[in-house]
Image (cartoon, rainbow, N blue to C red; front, side, top):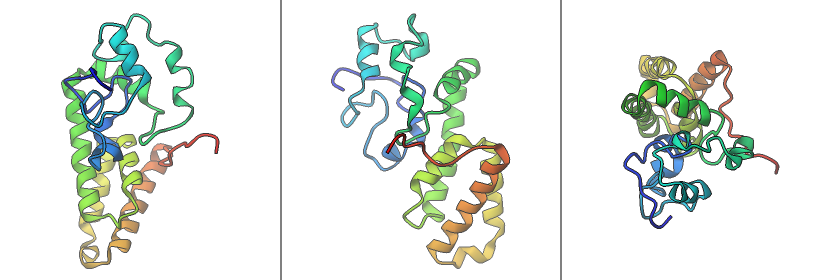
Length: 183
């Protein structure tokens, strides 16, 4: 959106983890307030009208009517933790939160580089976003321990990674499927 820029494009104004979004990972979006390619957004427009708070939770009107239907369907990243992540970033401090997101992005990049069959980007992005770092670490350690997988076809490597991510998600009671809303 023209005129909407932010210093920290990895974590959106409204609480989405842009750094873990398939659109940003694929180079199609620079993240919230990242300039050219930045998606048109009613919340960004509102931010400009409200004097440009760093995050919506810093606005006197938060939460406002713009959030009433926001979580009914996911976009490229899950929306289910958006408000909780805004709060968590506030509690941890922005730089600690961004460090956590970057840690998760490192795992995501490893999954995409070594365990992807070309069909798992959305799954890996959702898992990196929703799972805690300890769960992601366990997955990567389990994958590394399966030395026979290194020479396996991409499809087999991807299936192994997806199964381990699903096991961790089941353990945490998390769905890795995006809620696309009403069809």
